[in-house]
Image (tube, rainbow, N blue to C red; front, side, top):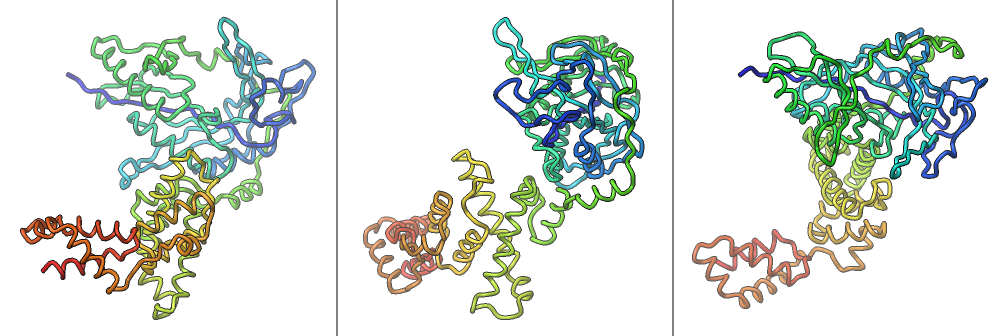
Length: 499
């Protein structure tokens, strides 16, 4: 039985977050009320003239640089003709043979170790269509989105699996958010995907007719649709009925299958010709240099730095760097931790020596508190990270309290929940709720004796070789002390007393 190789290419539409639309001055904002952000230009009224949004062009250059593309010095707009209720002019202003960016790439790490590079064929600018709203037997058209600025990113057919396609899109979304040209929110339609897929026998280098799956609006939908197509097309190849024409299909999320819509149009079907109302654009070196200066540290570079500088695993660095706001917050916590650590009277040596000796432990602790406790609370309460009430300074102070053993981990979790709800100062919460860790050997010894007298069976079990009984007794002491006891001291005291 022959095996088949999967060939996938993606077309990604990114709605830019400019204040105005691509060729007109009305707002580019989202609105639940239909047909409020419209104008004669976006509605395609006769006699109107489009004017290019300079900020959208700058966004195209910025994204091109972030994806290591060649930026066109000469670029132009074209008319792409097709007739559909959501296209008020009967054509779309797009780019055909002179896109703004070409020949780029994006590298992903499927196993968090080995890189895989996906080529970018082109990035071109265009305007969005309106939105059809289906209600019962009626279709209405909301023109709010008509004319919104889009960048369409077309990959080369370099992707070899459905999970790899999902990973690429997640990495691209992160990159787009880092450079700030779009929110790239798939649920709101800011990032939409068309996936092209075909198969070929292993060892064959030819490209066979592809199937395009339109308007996929989640990473999960992209992966599921592609997995379905791999299975469907494999069966066709095995029956010697491999696809012979380009086909467009849609994803039915209810049935979990793709559905044929039409045979796919070729470029000639769109009757492209240069947009006569918009002169060609010249992009000079100054514009490219200005965009390059605006590029922030990109996600992969930040991950590598986090691994090197903060001694994190690549996985942890990836989690922290997935959102630029989270990454910046984490670095502010680390900065505060350095200040707290160097202010402690118990530390010997220069600031740099102290940090080199103790900093790695604190960096990992900060990562754990942020990605485990705080992310967990955000998920539980369905809050966005931007709503977090805990300041970097207060989180650093809490970590320092744990580091100095002024509170144990159980008390610290109580404190962080209070901080999460009220934005409180951790030291104040510790004092008000009497959560300071008890280190007094006399006090702890007395409670250990009381617990041993209360649970003689557990004491005997430990003496009979059941080591787990020791930790059970530790738990009872901690419970009696309302979580305030130093657990290591309790363990040591019980072990000594149980001899």
